[in-house]
Image (tube, rainbow, N blue to C red; front, top):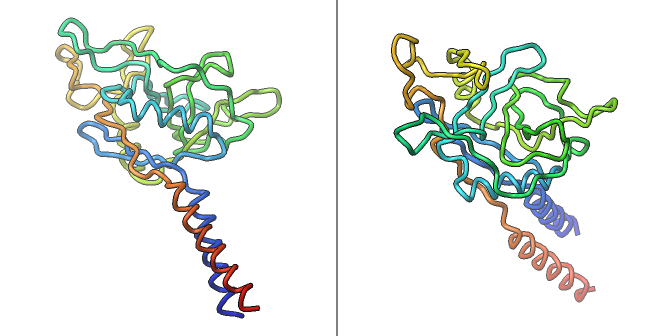
Length: 233
């Protein structure tokens, strides 16, 4: 009986671990390395929205256009501009192609360091493709006390050193649109800005996808085990 209960407990534990698993996305940053994002199941709308943009290749060649070091706004932000395919321009604006996502800040976690949040306008339900990395706990971004908040839908599980390297590059005031533009050390303000000077996402790929079928297989096996046990009396 003890052995039987042990088997049941292990099977249930395996089922729970698969059910609770969430996608992991690897973001490769040109010249700097990669970091991995574990998405959160408690914000399913933002989780699925992010995955569909990743699968579309939307984030390839996106630049980190904002490296904010102001108190309460410690963030790295991306997915508003990408390296231009034209020789006339350095970067071009990009716009999400899917409907905006309903705010889930009340369901998600706090905007603590190394979490991923959804960028939006003043409209709480306006998030599309844009996202940011919290570099500290930005309490003003959290839901509560009448503040709708900004939805946290993931956190960085590896490559934090890469993220810190991105955040610690030189930040330049490039005018009204880019007052906090992070640029690699290749730019020293003695020559014209080049496409290679930007902090660029080389690729974003889902590297771990939970398999719902695994839950079914475990469940069927457990049911069979219980049935045989019942038949034996």
